[in-house]
Amino acid sequence: MFMPPLLALPLIVYNVMALFGFADGAAWMSPLATISMVSGGVWALSVGDVFVLVSLVLLFGEILKSTRFGNASVVDHMLSTAVFVICLVEFLLVGYAATSVFFILMVMALIDVIAGFTVSIRAAARDVQFGGTE
Image (cartoon, rainbow, N blue to C red):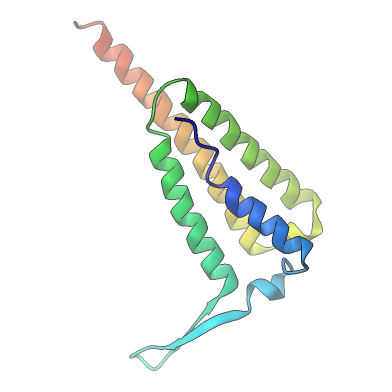
């Protein structure tokens, strides 16, 4: 079964938030919650922190998806590459994408591309190696 790249979702959310004027650097740093720690320190959880955390969970899902084989995985790799290229172009050319949150999202998209191709190549090499011994 084909599923679109999961990291396209945070990319779309980021751009929709930018349309409503929320994607500047200060908006991502606005605190959602502050938690007093036992050590006496105060942990401030920001909007950007939550966005990156959710994106990391989606990256985990993408890496799990990269272990599938077949025609759908080839299309998934191509679409994941397209998501990375869109992130890279947007980071370099669009002003509201010049934030640390977007940069981390772009690096996640790159990791998704590299992990997807690496898993596929390793699996193909294993199939070739064991395929001739039967």
